[in-house]
Amino acid sequence: MTHTPDGFAHRRSARVLIVDEDDRALLFFGAGLVRQDVDYYFTVGGAVDEGETLTEAAAREVFEETGLHVTPEDLGPLVAHTEGAWTTHEGVRFYSDDNFFFLRTEHFEVSLDGLETGEDKEISHYEWLSLDDLRATDAYVFPIGLAGVLKRLIAGETFTEPLELPWVELDPR
Image (cartoon, rainbow, N blue to C red; front, side, top):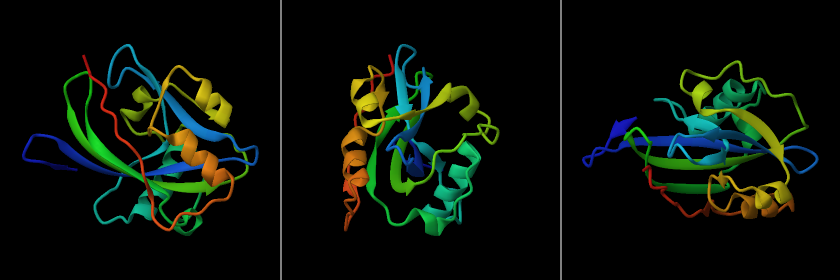
């Protein structure tokens, strides 16, 4: 992670949209990272380590955060991207560069045993959510526009370029 001149920690991440045979997406649920009063769902993934490719980081993160073994080749091309600034409720400032892969897999039991320190505090639990579940939740879903991207991917659409998703920064009050 590098720091920008304006004091933001620049964080490049590899994230994975994991969908099972019943068209349910695996998402983590958390609360309080950005604001104490905000619940949110977010995808599997995390920071790219020095010397790693995006696909290597994505495969590593899938294993660490879910226990599922995948290879970088299992992930295929990037399907989406978003980037922007955000601040934790504790005042830590980040500039995130999030890169998303799509992985179809059979349903599996998730193991959170490989979570790193800090992740275990951010992740309350995981859920396999349908598109209807995503549309119906009152919680924030990150990235913004995830349900629409998943709908297209589940339908079998492929992209020649990653979809550029909007960024919305929550006020950390």
